[in-house]
Length: 238
Image (tube, rainbow, N blue to C red; front, side, top):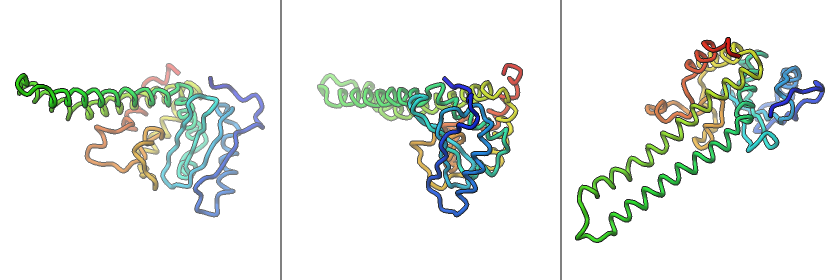
Protein backbone atom coordinates (compact mmCIF):
# COMPACT_ATOMS: atom_id res chain seq x y z
CA UNK A 1 0.00 0.00 0.00
CA UNK A 2 1.26 3.48 -0.83
CA UNK A 3 2.35 5.37 2.28
CA UNK A 4 3.03 9.02 3.02
CA UNK A 5 6.61 10.04 3.63
CA UNK A 6 6.94 11.08 7.26
CA UNK A 7 10.49 12.37 6.75
CA UNK A 8 10.68 14.65 3.72
CA UNK A 9 14.49 14.44 3.77
CA UNK A 10 14.37 10.75 2.90
CA UNK A 11 13.84 10.57 -0.84
CA UNK A 12 14.30 7.64 -3.20
CA UNK A 13 17.56 6.93 -4.96
CA UNK A 14 17.93 8.83 -8.22
CA UNK A 15 19.92 6.95 -10.81
CA UNK A 16 20.63 8.11 -14.34
CA UNK A 17 20.67 5.34 -16.94
CA UNK A 18 21.48 5.37 -20.63
CA UNK A 19 22.81 8.92 -20.40
CA UNK A 20 24.43 10.40 -23.46
CA UNK A 21 24.61 14.04 -22.42
CA UNK A 22 26.71 15.96 -19.92
CA UNK A 23 23.68 17.44 -18.20
CA UNK A 24 22.91 14.35 -16.14
CA UNK A 25 23.92 15.88 -12.81
CA UNK A 26 21.69 18.91 -13.31
CA UNK A 27 18.77 16.72 -14.37
CA UNK A 28 19.17 14.51 -11.31
CA UNK A 29 19.33 17.56 -9.04
CA UNK A 30 16.21 18.97 -10.73
CA UNK A 31 14.29 15.75 -10.22
CA UNK A 32 15.36 15.56 -6.57
CA UNK A 33 14.11 19.07 -5.97
CA UNK A 34 10.81 18.30 -7.63
CA UNK A 35 10.07 15.09 -5.76
CA UNK A 36 11.16 16.27 -2.30
CA UNK A 37 7.68 17.65 -1.65
CA UNK A 38 5.82 14.76 -3.28
CA UNK A 39 4.22 12.66 -0.52
CA UNK A 40 3.53 9.89 -3.05
CA UNK A 41 7.25 9.16 -3.25
CA UNK A 42 7.91 7.30 -0.02
CA UNK A 43 9.83 4.17 -0.89
CA UNK A 44 10.44 3.87 -4.61
CA UNK A 45 13.63 4.22 -6.59
CA UNK A 46 13.41 6.64 -9.49
CA UNK A 47 15.37 6.08 -12.69
CA UNK A 48 16.06 8.75 -15.29
CA UNK A 49 16.07 7.73 -18.96
CA UNK A 50 17.90 10.05 -21.32
CA UNK A 51 15.22 10.33 -24.00
CA UNK A 52 13.55 13.48 -25.42
CA UNK A 53 10.18 11.70 -25.60
CA UNK A 54 8.07 12.70 -22.55
CA UNK A 55 7.13 9.47 -20.84
CA UNK A 56 7.33 7.44 -17.63
CA UNK A 57 6.92 3.85 -16.54
CA UNK A 58 6.61 1.64 -13.47
CA UNK A 59 7.42 -2.00 -12.98
CA UNK A 60 7.66 -4.48 -10.14
CA UNK A 61 5.60 -7.43 -8.96
CA UNK A 62 4.60 -5.66 -5.74
CA UNK A 63 5.26 -2.36 -3.88
CA UNK A 64 8.33 -3.84 -2.19
CA UNK A 65 10.01 -4.65 -5.50
CA UNK A 66 8.98 -1.70 -7.64
CA UNK A 67 10.69 1.16 -9.44
CA UNK A 68 9.54 4.25 -11.32
CA UNK A 69 11.29 5.63 -14.39
CA UNK A 70 10.93 9.04 -16.02
CA UNK A 71 12.46 10.43 -19.19
CA UNK A 72 14.39 13.67 -19.42
CA UNK A 73 11.77 14.82 -21.92
CA UNK A 74 9.08 14.50 -19.25
CA UNK A 75 11.11 16.52 -16.76
CA UNK A 76 11.51 19.34 -19.25
CA UNK A 77 7.85 19.38 -20.28
CA UNK A 78 5.93 19.07 -17.01
CA UNK A 79 5.54 21.47 -14.10
CA UNK A 80 5.55 20.21 -10.50
CA UNK A 81 1.82 19.40 -10.28
CA UNK A 82 1.82 17.62 -13.63
CA UNK A 83 4.95 15.63 -12.80
CA UNK A 84 3.46 14.60 -9.47
CA UNK A 85 0.31 13.44 -11.28
CA UNK A 86 2.31 11.34 -13.73
CA UNK A 87 4.37 9.73 -10.95
CA UNK A 88 1.21 9.09 -8.92
CA UNK A 89 -0.30 7.38 -11.96
CA UNK A 90 2.72 5.10 -12.24
CA UNK A 91 2.59 4.33 -8.52
CA UNK A 92 -1.10 3.52 -9.07
CA UNK A 93 0.00 0.70 -11.38
CA UNK A 94 2.18 -0.64 -8.56
CA UNK A 95 -0.55 -0.25 -5.97
CA UNK A 96 -3.04 -2.04 -8.21
CA UNK A 97 -0.60 -4.90 -8.92
CA UNK A 98 -0.92 -4.32 -12.66
CA UNK A 99 2.27 -6.24 -13.46
CA UNK A 100 0.71 -9.35 -11.95
CA UNK A 101 -2.50 -8.70 -13.86
CA UNK A 102 -0.49 -8.41 -17.08
CA UNK A 103 1.26 -11.69 -16.38
CA UNK A 104 -2.04 -13.47 -15.72
CA UNK A 105 -3.56 -11.98 -18.88
CA UNK A 106 -0.55 -13.08 -20.90
CA UNK A 107 -0.91 -16.61 -19.51
CA UNK A 108 -4.58 -16.75 -20.49
CA UNK A 109 -3.81 -15.43 -23.98
CA UNK A 110 -1.10 -18.06 -24.39
CA UNK A 111 -3.53 -20.76 -23.24
CA UNK A 112 -6.04 -19.68 -25.89
CA UNK A 113 -3.36 -20.00 -28.55
CA UNK A 114 -2.32 -23.45 -27.35
CA UNK A 115 -5.91 -24.73 -27.21
CA UNK A 116 -6.65 -23.47 -30.72
CA UNK A 117 -3.48 -25.15 -31.98
CA UNK A 118 -4.47 -28.45 -30.32
CA UNK A 119 -7.96 -28.23 -31.82
CA UNK A 120 -6.73 -27.70 -35.38
CA UNK A 121 -4.21 -30.53 -35.07
CA UNK A 122 -6.93 -32.87 -33.89
CA UNK A 123 -8.97 -31.94 -36.96
CA UNK A 124 -6.11 -32.44 -39.40
CA UNK A 125 -4.92 -35.74 -37.95
CA UNK A 126 -8.33 -37.26 -37.31
CA UNK A 127 -9.74 -40.07 -39.46
CA UNK A 128 -10.20 -38.65 -42.96
CA UNK A 129 -13.30 -40.79 -43.56
CA UNK A 130 -15.16 -39.18 -40.65
CA UNK A 131 -13.86 -35.68 -41.27
CA UNK A 132 -16.55 -33.07 -41.88
CA UNK A 133 -15.40 -30.36 -44.35
CA UNK A 134 -17.45 -27.70 -42.57
CA UNK A 135 -15.78 -28.59 -39.27
CA UNK A 136 -12.42 -28.27 -40.98
CA UNK A 137 -13.31 -24.80 -42.28
CA UNK A 138 -14.45 -23.73 -38.83
CA UNK A 139 -11.21 -25.04 -37.37
CA UNK A 140 -9.12 -23.03 -39.81
CA UNK A 141 -11.14 -19.89 -39.03
CA UNK A 142 -10.64 -20.46 -35.29
CA UNK A 143 -6.92 -21.01 -35.84
CA UNK A 144 -6.64 -17.65 -37.60
CA UNK A 145 -8.96 -15.60 -35.38
CA UNK A 146 -8.13 -17.02 -31.93
CA UNK A 147 -4.67 -15.37 -31.63
CA UNK A 148 -6.01 -12.06 -32.96
CA UNK A 149 -8.95 -12.06 -30.53
CA UNK A 150 -6.65 -13.05 -27.67
CA UNK A 151 -4.30 -10.14 -28.39
CA UNK A 152 -7.25 -7.73 -28.64
CA UNK A 153 -8.48 -8.93 -25.23
CA UNK A 154 -5.01 -8.40 -23.79
CA UNK A 155 -4.87 -4.88 -25.18
CA UNK A 156 -8.37 -4.11 -23.88
CA UNK A 157 -7.39 -5.20 -20.36
CA UNK A 158 -4.29 -3.00 -20.57
CA UNK A 159 -6.38 0.02 -21.59
CA UNK A 160 -8.77 -0.46 -18.67
CA UNK A 161 -5.85 -0.69 -16.25
CA UNK A 162 -4.65 2.67 -17.57
CA UNK A 163 -7.99 4.24 -16.67
CA UNK A 164 -7.76 2.64 -13.22
CA UNK A 165 -4.22 3.97 -12.69
CA UNK A 166 -5.43 7.45 -13.67
CA UNK A 167 -8.13 7.26 -11.01
CA UNK A 168 -5.72 5.89 -8.41
CA UNK A 169 -3.20 8.64 -9.17
CA UNK A 170 -5.87 11.33 -8.90
CA UNK A 171 -7.03 9.94 -5.55
CA UNK A 172 -3.44 9.83 -4.29
CA UNK A 173 -2.66 13.46 -5.10
CA UNK A 174 -6.23 14.79 -4.71
CA UNK A 175 -5.42 16.86 -7.77
CA UNK A 176 -6.95 15.29 -10.92
CA UNK A 177 -6.40 18.54 -12.83
CA UNK A 178 -2.63 18.15 -12.59
CA UNK A 179 -2.77 14.70 -14.20
CA UNK A 180 -5.32 15.87 -16.79
CA UNK A 181 -3.05 18.78 -17.76
CA UNK A 182 -0.15 16.36 -18.11
CA UNK A 183 -2.22 14.20 -20.46
CA UNK A 184 -3.15 17.29 -22.51
CA UNK A 185 0.52 18.23 -22.86
CA UNK A 186 1.42 14.72 -23.94
CA UNK A 187 -1.31 14.70 -26.58
CA UNK A 188 0.38 17.74 -28.13
CA UNK A 189 3.87 16.25 -27.82
CA UNK A 190 3.50 12.68 -29.05
CA UNK A 191 7.12 11.76 -29.69
CA UNK A 192 8.00 8.06 -29.97
CA UNK A 193 10.87 6.90 -27.80
CA UNK A 194 14.29 6.30 -29.36
CA UNK A 195 14.36 2.68 -28.22
CA UNK A 196 11.01 1.05 -28.86
CA UNK A 197 9.84 -2.38 -27.81
CA UNK A 198 6.24 -3.49 -28.22
CA UNK A 199 6.66 -6.10 -25.47
CA UNK A 200 7.16 -3.38 -22.84
CA UNK A 201 4.91 -0.68 -24.33
CA UNK A 202 2.14 -1.36 -21.80
CA UNK A 203 4.45 -0.34 -18.94
CA UNK A 204 4.67 3.29 -20.05
CA UNK A 205 2.49 6.27 -19.17
CA UNK A 206 1.66 6.87 -22.83
CA UNK A 207 2.21 4.70 -25.87
CA UNK A 208 5.98 4.88 -26.63
CA UNK A 209 5.62 3.33 -30.09
CA UNK A 210 5.38 5.07 -33.41
CA UNK A 211 1.79 5.34 -34.60
CA UNK A 212 0.64 3.03 -37.37
CA UNK A 213 -2.56 2.33 -39.29
CA UNK A 214 -3.84 -0.22 -36.78
CA UNK A 215 -2.29 1.38 -33.71
CA UNK A 216 -5.69 2.32 -32.28
CA UNK A 217 -7.05 -1.22 -32.51
CA UNK A 218 -4.03 -2.90 -30.95
CA UNK A 219 -2.93 -0.05 -28.68
CA UNK A 220 -2.13 -0.79 -25.06
CA UNK A 221 -3.27 2.72 -24.09
CA UNK A 222 -6.59 4.53 -24.50
CA UNK A 223 -6.53 7.92 -26.28
CA UNK A 224 -4.94 10.64 -24.14
CA UNK A 225 -7.91 12.96 -24.75
CA UNK A 226 -10.33 10.34 -23.40
CA UNK A 227 -8.23 9.87 -20.28
CA UNK A 228 -8.10 13.60 -19.49
CA UNK A 229 -11.83 13.94 -20.20
CA UNK A 230 -12.65 11.13 -17.76
CA UNK A 231 -10.56 12.77 -15.05
CA UNK A 232 -12.22 16.15 -15.47
CA UNK A 233 -15.75 14.72 -15.65
CA UNK A 234 -15.18 12.83 -12.39
CA UNK A 235 -12.98 15.32 -10.55
CA UNK A 236 -15.63 15.89 -7.85
CA UNK A 237 -15.27 12.21 -6.87
CA UNK A 238 -11.59 12.57 -6.01
